[in-house]
Amino acid sequence: MLLTPEKEELKREIGVRALALAILNMTVGAGIFVIPAIIAENLGAAAILAYLICGALIFLIALCFAEVGSKITVSGGTYAYIETAFGPFAGFLANHVFWLGSCVISDAALANALADTLKYFFPFLQQPIFRTIFFILLFGGLAVLNIRSVKHGVRFIEITAFGKLIPLLLLVVVGAGYVSMDNLRWTSTPTIGSLGAACLLLIFAFTGMETPVTNSGEIKNVKRTVPLGIFFGIGSVLILYMAIQLVTQGVLGNTISAHKDSPLAAVAGIIFGPAGITLMIVATSISMLGGLGGEILSIPRVLYAGARNGILPKVLGEVHPRYFTPHVAVAVYAFLGLVFAVSGGFKQLAIISGAATLLIYLGVVLATIQLRRTKSIASENTFQVPGGILIPLLAVGVIIWLLTSLTPMQFLSFAIFILLLCVIYYIITAMKKNP
Image (cartoon, rainbow, N blue to C red; front, side, top):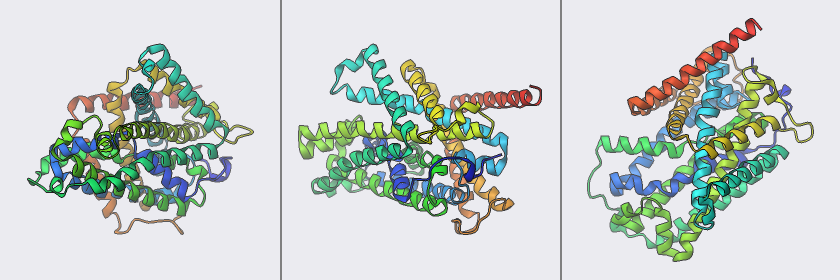
């Protein structure tokens, strides 16, 4: 049984601006610094079509998040949404698939990518001992920041969001003057197959809105803040992504495929010279750091909610008597990220992480339909997706389409992961019945 908002003991300090910036921060990650070249390699100047399609698809899912998020006001976000709609077993799967399969592993990968990026300035990070010390300082510092206050964590996200977005916006605004219209003319019409392949890759650049809403127990006026925060956040992401793609394609033209590793740094080098390359490297680092900060702010609330609802050890549900934050959950989550980052053995798990995010999206969309059917949650003054269940059904179709694009080996790995969670759930249930 989920807690009522009054029993959570958490402070509600997150408003529309903070939520929108958190979504923008979590979605605009390191991928946008490299993905324009990858998309353009297959589609050329028609790459903008993939952004329009993915933007439309992610808005379908965002509408469902907005509706269910305006109804469920306790901490846990996606986990709370799915458990409320489908019960404890679905909640258990959602909780663990999300925080472990979708978040911890990707955080470890992000930390390694940050270390690799910073090697440009600090070559000693190539050495294992210094790399390990860096990971300890990184995860430890972010954990302490978020334990001391949710407000500190939110402020950190806002600062890194601006620190990441300002260089990107500067690149777009100044770079628009360097765009050649010849580079934006379509030389061929993309096929459905090539568009589908590009969208399958690009859709992952749009994921991230599911993370900030896990702080739903600390959001002010949830019925208003969640829909507005999601709309402003996702809308801003779409506009920024399209502008970056157009400027990158317009400046580099056919040479864009020669800059697969750092197309934006190449554009910045043309516009600003060597200082521009340094600027983009710094912006990439800030982007990764902000992404990690956002994860360590939000995802421990999933552990906290799971502990409060009896599917995780009770100690994870403790709230700090002075700072009023789930300090144990934050510390444990950061420690797990550190362990995986140091070990580095998570390439196959990273594949599971992508499928896990899509499965969580599917659960939230289905929860939107289920909560309408049961009417178990009061719907007065809450946001509701227009058009009945048409939009949720379209979102279901899109997600299933994306999941069917996974390879058989990826499907098998993910199925084994889910099967293990099912076994763990039934063991826990049996132990509760026969302690």
